[in-house]
Length: 163
Image (cartoon, rainbow, N blue to C red; front, top):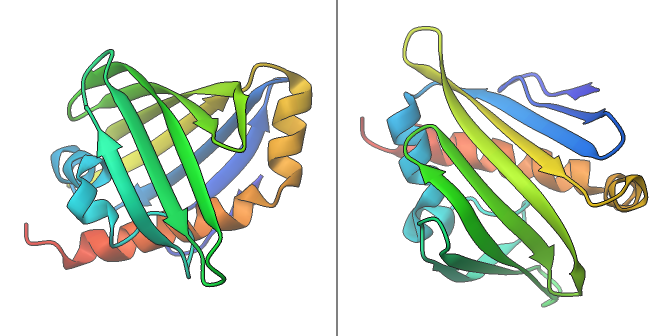
């Protein structure tokens, strides 16, 4: 498990197929959920430092499709896509996720927004891989760096939003 100081970021492998990522945010679940799911808001924080969200398409309902594309400083584009299985504002989203470069490997991501302390939220994302091998590849890809920066950027953006 790895921890970040400011937002209590954690990332851990659980069981044979899961990756669990979490952080604590100083805003209620309603605000966190809204900022997490709004394309305009996402343009300020989605992806690690140096990445720009250039496409944000989503139909935020069970059965709705989504697709996000980022571009890094060198111009390389990365696309992710999937289908929402469950959307229960402001507490839970379950969706499939696949990388456009490897569309046949699909994970299931369960993101929860749990009230924490006086007006805060514990955001937790559990990524369930189809196999131990795909999870190992995900962990070995350096994804922790990108997720940590994304969560930190999200927290910084959230702090700029009016209550």
